[in-house]
Amino acid sequence: MRILLIVYDNDSHINTFPIGIGYLTSVLEKKYHVDIYHQDIHHYYEEHLTHFLDQGSYDVVGLSFIGGYYQYSKAVKLARAVNRSSKRPFFILGGHGPSPEPDFFMRKLEADAVCIGEGEETILDLLDAMAHRRSLSTVPGIAFMDGNSCVLNERRPLIADIDTIPFPAYHRFPIEHYRLMRMPRCTRTDFIMVMLSGRGCPFRCNFCYRMDAGFRQRGNEAIIEEIKLLKRDYGINYIAFYDELLMSSVSRTESLCEDFIRHKLDIKWEANGRLNFARPDLLKLMHSSGCVFLNYGIECFDDTVLKNMHKGLTTKQITRGVEATLAAGISPGLNMIFGNHGENRETLRKGVNFIKKYTDDAQLRTIRPVTPYPGCELYYDAIRMGKLKDCEDFYENKHLNSDLLAINFTELSDDEFYEAIYSANEELLLYAQERGRIATMQQLDKLYKDKDISFRGFRGV
Image (cartoon, rainbow, N blue to C red; front, side, top):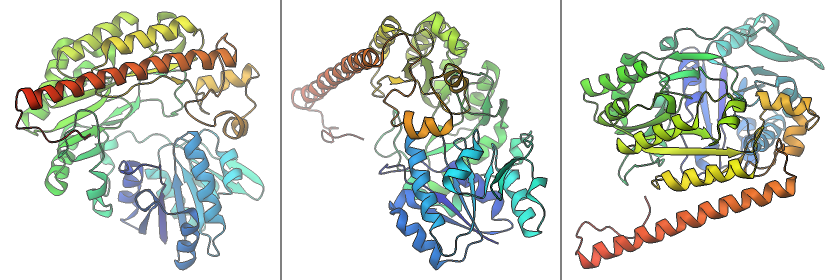
């Protein structure tokens, strides 16, 4: 059986390593012939995929994507290209995007099946059923089309021990391209790679559409072994942990950092953090182990709204944690969104003030409207409130850009909402611009007044 996995173009010059496809490839290549279609690197037009399939001989084509207006429109175009092929293979969808609403996505994209949630075991079971002409109804974790009907099978249990999953198949990908991605606090000569330290998250924010409950961590030994492989084989010296929450507890984070130090990994790394665990002693240890950036989902600087979001955070914890992060020498990612239940101009003002007070310019931060992606609590709130009909209404009519309003949960009119968020982001962008001007003039002074021989030009990373 010949399988083609599509990595879609996300409109970036340097793309992030497609870690989900990397994991799928590692389990599939042991039994099947697997090819990777790199639209992401070569920026192929969709018509190229049709021609590629016509010239090849594939039994299965797979497309995985997350939720989002861009990802949705890209999936529609790629699906059209697949379905136009004279040698159209069996067409499988996967990822966080189609998993909450498989019926809609199969019909819209004219696909044959959806792998719901975690895919490594499900895809092997599905392909085995196809190879042995076993009914697809026997495969947990999928939805499939039976004539004009969508059949939704029972969910497959999550993989309890994720260390049993082999490392991503790095040898099948052009790592020389992916390692050029840029992250906060990297230098011009750093080589960067994404990794997972675990799967899932113990928290249930009302705007999060990821369906797998709970948190499963990888063992420290496996993480360190993978880092050593990336250093040895690909020259990687900066790890970007892309899982939802590396900082899942104080004890887990301490243990991982201590092992990084014990094994003398000598790397930079960044991850998603939790401010209620951001204690000075832990952050100092994290910095000593190579941590340079922690991405924090603050979302709002108001206790009532934080409670509405189910964030499990308070403004006191946020302030204390961000101040401790900066004091430890780690840059904080100050993520804010606007428009959840209970938000107003004052809560937005608090968010703007917080970003201006604590930014260290490692990232440019603006504030986006909250988006009720299918699968999250807010999505079902919007349907219950009569603000949204269904998944098709969301993707075709409401969610047309991540920086524009999809559903308004506030008491502001839509025009008032846009006026408020325009003013907020204008202030943030002008503030960042002025800080950048000051930093550039300081660099100019250092160059010509102090005769700085280390100067390498007025250029970005």
